[in-house]
Length: 205
Image 1 (cartoon, helix red, strand yellow):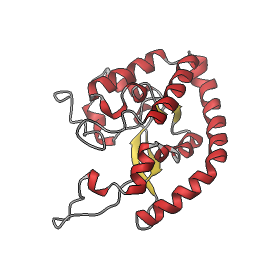
Image 2 (cartoon, helix red, strand yellow):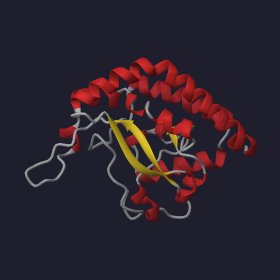
Image 3 (spheres, helix red, strand yellow):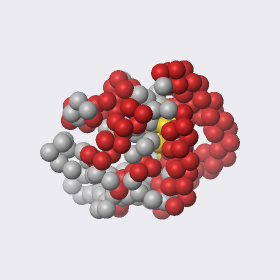
């Protein structure tokens, strides 16, 4: 496991990410143009996220929601700001394509716990914090077992299980299951929102 996670996995990540970017470059260009128009010149979403060992990096995704605000100056609800093209991009998981650049930079892996918000770092318990023992991934064990449709506690349990059981066969299984989930559009939204509700600590679900 150590040999795979430390040497083989990073090499495979970079090789596959480079090939995927070249293969998907026409899709990348077309989506950039459409989202540039839909989001008033802002096709990409960049945000600080914690990576391996909590090191902060900037994740890059396609921007699926505009920045429209209400009369009070606050951002409108997610479901209101989700643009038509953004809805399609999110449903098909095409918004994740730019993260291949994060993989090439070494900030992320193809498979691993998803990189969450920096503000969550002090909220984890010791067991949940183990999710940062490996590079975060574009997809992961939690994503193929419910994604945004499961609770935070379930999601963290899946993340930690992956860290404890990381292997080449498991990564292949997750990648295959990811393709199936994307085709079926399963777990994209939570039960009450187009995005996952924020994690507020272990006293909440």
